[in-house]
Image (cartoon, rainbow, N blue to C red; front, side, top):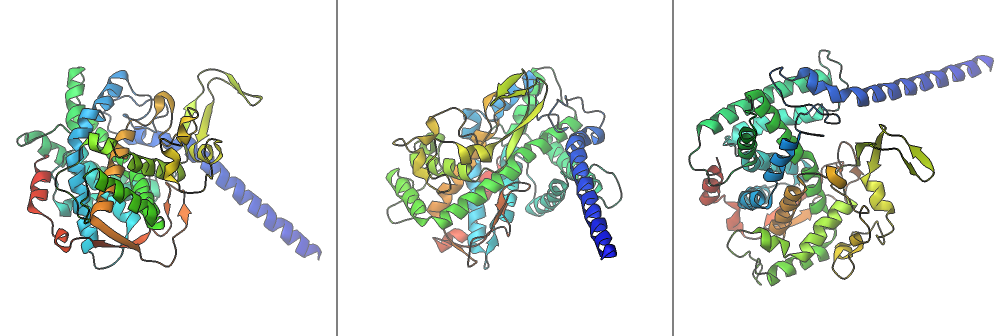
Length: 437
């Protein structure tokens, strides 16, 4: 009995030691992973690496001129020019989903869709589909290892991430050089055009390394969270057919969908989308109940007191978006998917400044939130107008929150085109997309 007791104590001590070791490793990782890209970036890159930027020169507390650049990239005028191209990319993708003989993994396909949108629309790159597929696979490897421990050993996640990043930047450099050499046929200024021209206006000619870094960060910003929200949108339309039908009724009332069910001709416009009140409610409710990320970090600028606790100046604090949405007293039946809570009659989100903050809040709110909402609205319109889709499993999957919110099995769905003729990719679609380069 004595020996058994000693063995039990020894086992518990070993378990405790393991837990302490894991905790320490996580703490070290949290403190050090921010430095990884600063240590591996090309030394010719002169963009600032601000505090809280995770080593990315364009993210965080950036210089004033960079904030001006991003305000142009996501301005109303810029979004209006992106809109027709975003619609075409989504239409093309939904036709491919509908023509697929088997069910698709929505989360994986949504990642491909948002990556394609970033490459084709936001950056204006003309990359062949085969090369684009390979570039996506490399980017996936890069993203999967972003949060690995910063230990540069053979076969480590960190080493794989660095190698993927190097391969990715080679492909991006090729695309950038081709883009800079080909200026004919442009019908709009994409985000990379604006970044280049604005830097020149501020006397900051960007090097190739800086252009590659900026390009990679624009893709990163448009990728994971938008794919997460897109998957959540599709899942909720599947779970709540009455919401989908009410959305179709609004589209019919606004002349976007014929009474017979087929979509009306013509591309969408920003003012048309802004007039779709119920669509706005649906997107808001998806972002309230299924916020892609848990929260954000901030640095305390001035000592303050909260619920009797003093928070000193200089401390790093984290705010939780999901906990805020779950506990905010303004929302009724917080676990229920109810788009009408954002209707003009109820306006639950209007009773307070920081009860609803899917994109953060204050001066550090997400700069790309209008682009993200635009993408989700167009996706919802196209889903309601041109697709029929069914859950391919008996039950809906569990949700995991790491690294962003998504279904554990990716959400298996079978898509059917409302019109079989729409399964063929139209020549004008390819022509219009190629004209963006």
